[in-house]
Length: 353
Image (cartoon, rainbow, N blue to C red; front, side, top):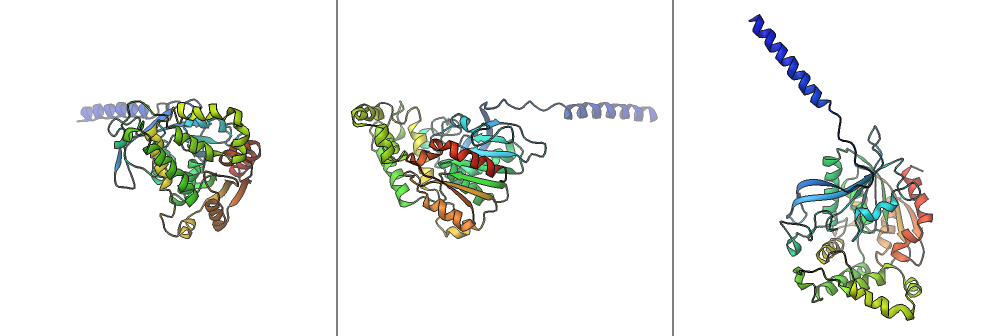
């Protein structure tokens, strides 16, 4: 009996050493800054009761997670943008300094990188389920918690549709974030915003090349791009950049290139997500405002013709948030035109100043 007990003990010690050795294996090295990565989330349940099958989010990271895991900043993409297009914001002179923060730039649904009508095998094209801004944020929360193992974010920030997601984050997950910085975003669209987005939607649906979403070749959708470009800045900016002698060639370019290389069904899916965006769910905004716990910096463009600044300004006033106003003829893209003015303000707010 003692012999058998000794053999059992030796076997147990050997097994324990083996499993302990496995547990102490070094973790996979972090991906290089800016490298495209993917999180496979299985099925993503949507507000409308449907699911995105094989749900996948693309993302890129910059910087390192601190020892106490308190320096993560999540930055979702804007309308028709991808994580690669936000790389310029990730440096010491721009919005997020990777020497201080672990930046997580997320490709949102419908951008052609994450799950989208254009890349879904199970639900391609028009079969892809409609999703909302809230659905985008729900998937981002899963990325942060399930894939990256985070229990808290220092901040969420985003531009345009990324700003809409930031408003959604501060209402849906109020204790999960310390700081929120929506830039030219909105908690709820105005009638003027909806006029633009519905006009783009109608222009797409009436384009014969769209073929009800069943096209074999991506259509340029020139009228959609013309409408979009007309509202992206201000009349003064457009007139200066497109003098009459250049206009004929510039206008022809809308119909040659249009929204390409962005996919038409992807464009429509994100467009409809914005059309239905409302952090109050069509109810009283004060109920949504009362949920906010984060420190908030709201950035608006006074001459924005694409996302009206009034709802964001009203929301900021109600919660006592700091407001920073951009006022250039660049309109909706003032955050780029006035980057030298905006970037130090955002970095200081992230640092708690």
